[in-house]
Amino acid sequence: MRKNILLIYLFTLLPLSVLAQIGEHRDEFAIGVSGGYALSRVSFVPDVQQKMKGGPIVGVTFRYTTEKYFSSICALVAEVNYASIGWKQDILSLIDEPVINPTTQLAEEYERQINYVQIPFLARLGWGRERKGLQFFFQVGPQMGFMLSEKTVANYPLDQRNLEMRSSVVVAQESMPVEKKFDYGITGGIGLEYSHPKIGHFLVEARYYYGLGNIYGNTKRDYFARSNFNNIVIKASYLFDIAKTKNNKIK
Image 1 (cartoon, helix red, strand yellow):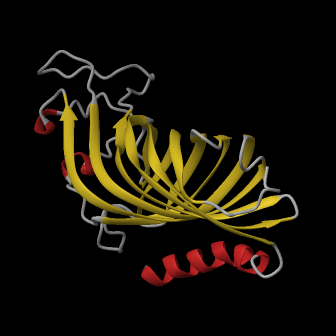
Image 2: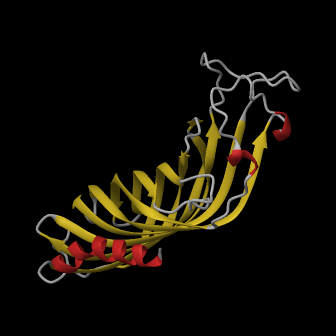
């Protein structure tokens, strides 16, 4: 598992290491804060019908800009984020109607909230203005996650589900705590940045994360063959410069 993360990280940074040998040198460091919203689900096999579950994501960002190669601005980005993710089930009957629980007389609802510290390491390429104006960017890299806590939210007793009406009887996940506290995968996204020399950098970004690990065991003895995360993140960030390259030609 850790070997896979290292290989992904080295593969991601390879283009920057090549550019660093022949590009215009940069030596700029910026830090800042970010906040946004994460939409998440877990890909279960056997399948569990779901809707996207929403939750906040907040954190700190560190960026080191290394080179400019022709029009491409190359940087390395690291983040430490707190994210509330998980899954929300879409409990339907065979005729695609909500399933009513006989005990509560309510349409059955279930979701699992799982809180993580997430640490992505990203290779970034940008095109546009560095000092003042707009810049479009793309970034991609590995991400690690460490589970802090989990919480189940259900409006029915788990031992009194209405299984007779459900279109799916896959319910093992409802009572199973997360078994694997460490998550890892690959993340990438695109965004826009507006920079001002006296104010700093303002960024908006859309990002996708695909988990390569599982939250449950996936051996032949386990119930689920797969249980990995898929997340969509929309976030805004503010960065301010700690160190800047001394070059008046940089725009």
